[in-house]
Length: 486
Image (cartoon, rainbow, N blue to C red; front, side, top):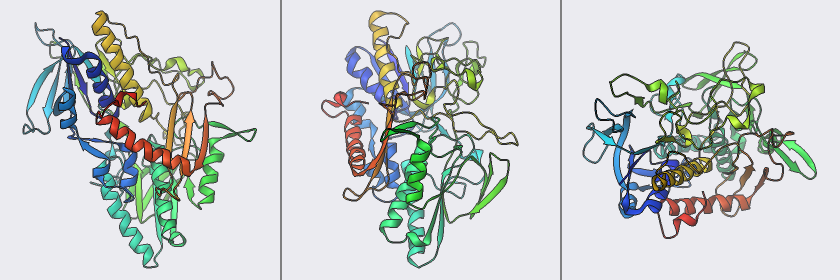
C-alpha cells in the first residue's frame, strides 16, 4: 500500500486527491493536508465582494466530502519536508502542524511515498506598506472572508453616493510584481456595473491601477485577437471596455505605500505619484507558503527543493535566460522535482522559469511587470495530470511520469463577469492557446489566432454562472463528477 500526501485542498490539490482516489481505490492511502476546513470556489469571491452571493454560496465543508470518498483529511499546514527521512530511517516524511480538529498547534510526522505540493500562495500584504484588510487600508477578494469584508466596506461607499457625495474607487494590483490582474479586472467591472445599475455612476470616479505596461496584458503578455478580418491586440479590447464605461486607468504602476485615503506609486517613467481614494481593493503579491526542506542529518536543504520565492522546483529550465532567449520549452512538462522523483508541485506552488509578460523596470530600477498566473483552469489540469502520473508510477513501479500539463502546450478559458444579473448582466469571455507564447509553433504572435479570442455579452455571464455550479458540484464529488472537464 502506497501513501500519497497532498499538501493543499484548493483547486489543484483537491482535483489531484479526487482523481488519485478514484483511480487507486482502497488499495492505497490518499491524505490531504490543508489548513482550511472549507473548500472555496475562488472565482466567485468577486460576487461575494459586491453582495451578489454570500460566502456560504462559494464554500463547503471538506470533511464530509473526503469521508465520502475515503480520503484522509488532516486540517493542518506543512512545516517542513524531509525527502530523505532522518538518521537511519530513510522513509520520507512531511512535518505538519494542526490548525483544527481539536489539535491546534500540535505537530506530527506524516510519512509518504509520493508528495504533491499544492499549497497555493502566501498573500504577501506586508510587501506593500498599508495594503490589506487586516493591517492596512485596502480590502481584498482573495479569500471568502476578505470578500465578505470588502462588501461591507463597499456598502459604505454606496451609502455615501446615495447621499449625493462623490467617491473615488481604485481597484488593481498592490505591487510591481503582482499576478492575478484578471481578478482585479473582474472586481472592477462588477463594482462599475453595481454602481451604474443603482444610478449612482455620476458621483463615482472609478480607476484601475495596474503593474501591466498596457491594458489587456493580464500577465500573459496580452493576446492578439482576430475580429472582422482584422488582428488587434487585447490592449484595444480592454481600452474600449474601459472607455465605454468611463473607467480611468493607470498602467505600469508599482504601489509603494497606501495611507488612509492616499495611494502612493511609482510608474515606469520613474515618476512618483499619488492618488486620493475612498475605497480601494489591491491584489497583493504572492510567494510560496514558507515550507522548509531538511536532510536526514538535520541540515537545511531548502534551496534544493524551493526557489528563494518559496515556490517548488520542478522540471523547468531555470538557467536565467534573457528575454530574447525565452522559449516555450522552458516550461515544465510533468511538474516532477528533478532530484526527488516522488515529489511534484502543481498550480501556484510550482516555480515558473520566468514571467510570461516582458520583464520591465522603471528608470529607477524598480521591477514593474506581472508575474505569471497559474490559477483556475491550468491548476486543475496540472492536478489531474500529476494524479494520473502517480497512479501509473504506482501500478508500473517506475519513476517516470507519463502525463503532462505544460502551460506552453495547454489553453485556458477565462470568463470575467462585468455584472451579475441574469437578464442584463454581462461577461468578458476570453480563451487563449497556448497560455505561454510558443513562437516556435506560432512565429507571428506566439498563439493560435483561431483558438484565441475575446467576446463581451450576456451569454458569457450565463456560462460563468453555470461554471460556478458545475465546479462546486464536481468538487463535492457528486455523481459522475469526473465527467466535468477541468
